[in-house]
Image (cartoon, rainbow, N blue to C red; front, side):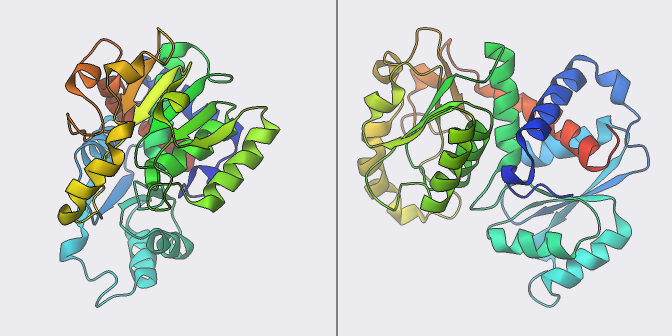
Length: 308
């Protein structure tokens, strides 16, 4: 079994992973030998702080070992095919996580691997981040079903796509506030699938082009970078002008519920997708969210390796 997008799991499996993450966080010593003699291969094509450190620390704390493999020094996709790389790596290690650009590449890798493969980020999907987000929301709010999450800003990205899946599968209402442009709107096929999940779970998926409307009565306000890794630096000024109406500032936060929390998966740029007073303010839970990458990914590795 692999995790390439959240739809590879059903709602029950997502909740099992979240609850196990909370259990591991509260009782880490209970799991300190769970992956003894197991090895994780970590393949990176993109820069990373949280992903690399959380996976490597997580595997170490579970009693296993992690290998960092930079694709810049790898023959994968160049001298050696992705499929051959996957087949070879599967003979050496017990589980693989990959942080790549193209989603098709991780799909090809997983289809040729004989060990579990975790998507640690592609341009399309970021399931590990959203598992951590959902775990954090459950910790802070006590439940998930019936809450409203408002996502503001550039919505044609991996985090928005994964939030649409995760929220709709677990009965969380999600309102996406973004410019009315295909450049910034989530992929239609993702929205369509999320609406199918939402119909089953009696929740709402909506795409609006007014930040205040999206934020109205929200329990969670969420934003992400306006400059994803694949966006060229020369596009920055134009994108800032287009996205500034969706910046999360203190005035926008007033449209959410008084006890709303603020989330950003990080890295964050103060003065762009959010202001300093929001991300550094009392409603911000961004570092709790970052920490929970460690705990929920430990849970995920245990589940995929059938050790929990």
